[in-house]
Image 1 (spheres, rainbow, N blue to C red):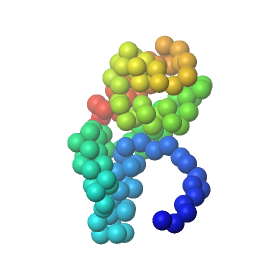
Image 2: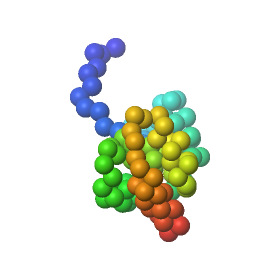
Image 3: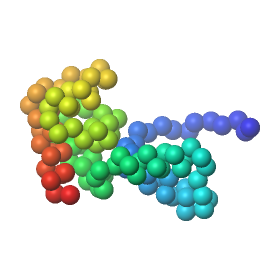
Length: 115
């Protein structure tokens, strides 16, 4: 096997991953076994279509210490109340006040209601 080297890393959400798999399918005409299984899982779990719009809305809230990777995880899970958002963020060493959490949840609920 060729010696591979990672050039860069960037977090993505499930919606972006689905787009990448579609691009690979168009380029190669088919996906390998693992990519097919991943695509099946994504088709079953993705609930919203335009995650890029939601990402920009949450980013524009200007919440301190909330990084890109956190926003992508929030989009993937789409918590509908503050307690669910707390559970999502427990895996990270980040503290966000309840007022900011309420803003995030309100933004997600507003976005999901529109769709």
